[in-house]
Image (cartoon, rainbow, N blue to C red; front, top):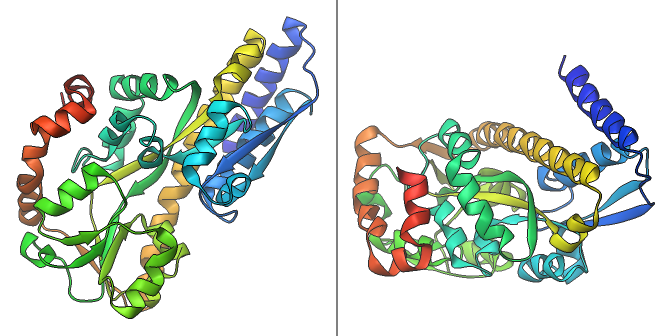
Length: 330
């Protein structure tokens, strides 16, 4: 049934293009993402490419460049390439996009979402539209919102079952004002470091733990150097799937519509794959002897209370804007 629906979608888009009588020129679009080629991030580019190729009778193809190959692994430059037009499509985390506009870190405010259902409702609703305008203000066209996910906390010291357990842990945290402030309030002894340094740092004791979505952590073999992981909804980050604005604007209206439909569908498919991947990694890690902890309601309330002041902190509010925070919290 799902294959029939997907085929029907592609057929309708193809008929729409033919009906308008616009001949699509042969072209290849370059898609850059920060994750490696064996991830659902890269799959999103391939999925989009398959749909757009079928809808244009093969006129448009998409070449996937995973791990930001086009910019020597530099994620920020990968996005800059799409802004400048040297790269056509990008899939990167909101935390990386925030290097261009700090307001995009609003998606990663602590406990902004309490479930995947909450994520979907907000990011496909008014809040998602508001943050989408911020993305597009950078000279980009937002095609869809994918998922990096809830950032699980791993460590090799103890299970984190309460706020007290977090205190003093030496954690590598992604370089982001919102995350740094949250882990300050949770009492962690955090530091920022390049992701490429983390595995060795955990081996040598430079760090005792780190925080990342399960698939990312598993891809870097964190279960080999960590004994505990906390599965929670403390911090989330999404993926913005974007296109160079000038390229999008140059397309005929019917093709623009098709691009948006294909982009939204590819992002939806990626979110599903990412969530399936989380469950697979959890089971894999359990089998490998990693202790997986789920927080009690009381513990969640403790962590929430500790970071609640962030939502009214003048510095944070100025950074993210009151209107954008309100769009996600009302």
